[in-house]
Amino acid sequence: MREQFYQQMNQLAETLVVEAKAAAKAMSGAAEALRDANLTKAEKVIDADRKIDLLERTVDEMGVSLLARQAPVASDLRIVVSALRLSATLERMGDLARHVAYIARGRYPDVAVPGDVHKLLVTMADHAAAVGKNVAELVETRDLSLAAQIVEEDDVLDDLHAKSFQIVLDDSQELTRQEIVDIVLLGRYLERYGDHAVSVARRMNFLVKGLGNDGSDPFAEVDLTEV
Amino acid sequence: MREQFYQQMNQLAETLVVEAKAAAKAMSGAAEALRDANLTKAEKVIDADRKIDLLERTVDEMGVSLLARQAPVASDLRIVVSALRLSATLERMGDLARHVAYIARGRYPDVAVPGDVHKLLVTMADHAAAVGKNVAELVETRDLSLAAQIVEEDDVLDDLHAKSFQIVLDDSQELTRQEIVDIVLLGRYLERYGDHAVSVARRMNFLVKGLGNDGSDPFAEVDLTEV
Image 1 (cartoon, chains in turn cyan, orange):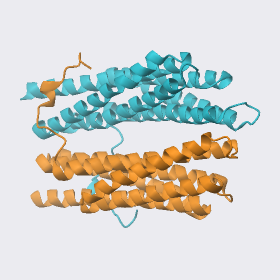
Image 2 (tube, rainbow over the protein chains, first blue to last red; image 1 turned 90 degrees about the horizontal axis):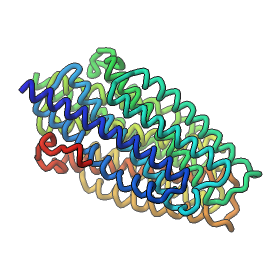
Image 3 (tube, rainbow over the protein chains, first blue to last red; image 1 turned 135 degrees about the vertical axis):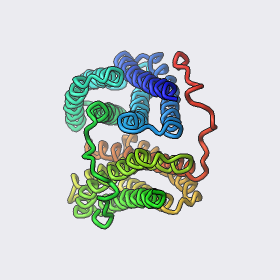
Image 4 (spheres, chains in turn orange, red; image 1 turned 120 degrees about the vertical axis):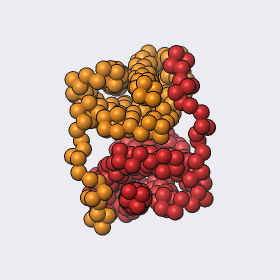
């Protein structure tokens, strides 16, 4: 029973790593599709998203199965609950990469946005891809120095996102309506990808350090008239 | 022990209902703020979001505490795991309502977008608010006819969202850059609110009917070379 338990915990952790790597690969493919108006790459990212969805479901079912059969406690319980949450976040990161790929595919054979904004958005996408890679490595190695890097990279993403708005709101920049829409949506998708990465970083921090819970009784504290 | 268990299960369910009602109220306030350029309403929605965040954490802590101390099985386990997932989705719905309120506040004393588009976006926001109300009622009553209604309302939201793009991409519509940005973002926030509502509807369907799990062993099935 104990041996089976540890084997299943390992399988859960491994599947989560596979999902994290898939979510990272999706954004690195989407960044390439965006940079080079690469249709094949865009299609690949879009197709691969179903696999990420499947991985999410697998992690979820494994987690629930572990809870039901093994009733883990303490740090094992923390790992299982974290896995359930991380799988949902990673799935969402895959969706966002797919959205970026959709726009690249929709504008093919042109690049999605022109000139300087193209450079800015490709830089954003490259940063998002780097963040994704850090997320996958963090989930695999639990090296918390990567969590700090993710938070820093996300700040860069936020700055670039703000710059993209400056360009869009500057009437002297010649942009078509479609280009404006694409810039706003791409900026939003890439910024959100970074937000989700930060959420993974926080959860991994909690998982490794066991922080974030003050040990008080949540049932003792709740006062629903207060909120 | 059993009595305490059922009492804690009830508290978990009640807290989730409070969170769902808060997420619904947030969107109904955001819709009003958007319609009337109502600054007070917008501020209220923005402030209230912290309470939703707190409710999410409370539900999470209650759920993890129940898993740790009571090791629930079968339908009780399903309720706890569903609560953990629902709390995250409802928190996100609150965030999206807050984003809508930010735009309303940012354009005050003007309405955020002009003329016909204003009408369209207010209609979207009203639909989102209706969806939110249905979500809260579904979480409270577990009446699955509401789940079907939510899916239908979300289709309406998607259609309205598509219409907002048609207007933005039509060069004969006079729109400033800021208006275009606001329309794209508002459309995105409101459409996502609907998506999250559908995700709640699906989870509640699973919770009530116990479907969505074919009873197979997730650990037996996983083949990571396949994905």
